[in-house]
Amino acid sequence: MNWFGEKLMCRDVTRLLSQSQDARLPLVRRIRLRAHLVVCGACARFDAQLRFLRDAMQRYRS
Image 1 (cartoon, helix red, strand yellow):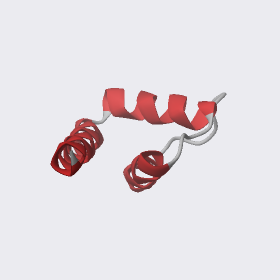
Image 2 (spheres, helix red, strand yellow):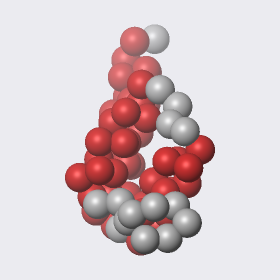
Image 3 (cartoon, helix red, strand yellow):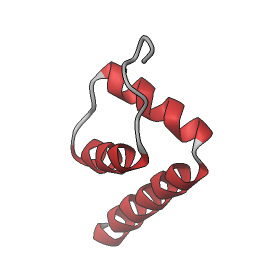
Image 4 (cartoon, one colour):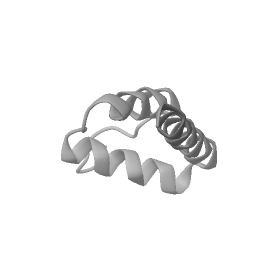
């Protein structure tokens, strides 16, 4: 355990990334999430895919 709490697992990160699409996460969760994305390529790719889909949907609606 460290200052930010227990290490995030990938399943937690995917849940948080999905939640962050709907609402802003608290600061500590955002920091922990970003730290995990720096070291986990799979989660970073999932984040990029979510962002791509969100941007595509916004362009489609316009």
